[in-house]
Image 1 (tube, rainbow, N blue to C red):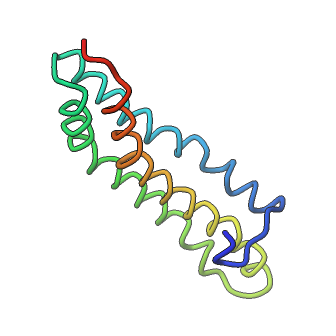
Image 2 (cartoon, helix red, strand yellow; image 1 turned 45 degrees about the horizontal axis):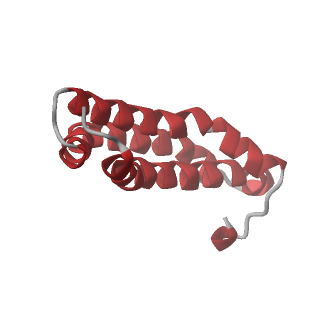
Length: 117
C-alpha cells in the first residue's frame, strides 16, 4: 500500500474487509484439493503439485473476475473518484497477494508439513 501512497485508514480497512472472504476462499480450495490427493495415497510433494495444478486455472479466473469488478470504481473521475479509489486499490492488492499465497506459498507449506496418509 505504501507504493501507492495509501495509508491505513477507514477506507483502506474497508477494502481489506470487503475481500477477506475471497482471500480465504482461494486458500481453502487449494488446501482441500491437496488434502484430497493425500487421501488418494500421493506423497505430500506430489499432492501439492497435482492439487495446485488442478485448481490453478479456476482460482486465477476467480481472482481476475473479482479484480475486473473493482475496475469501474478505480477509474472513476472527480473528487469522489479520488476519494473512493482507495477501496479498489487495496482490494486489488489484497486479491493479487492472496493469489500468490494460494498458488505458491500454501502448496510449499503443505508439501513440507503435511504427513502422508
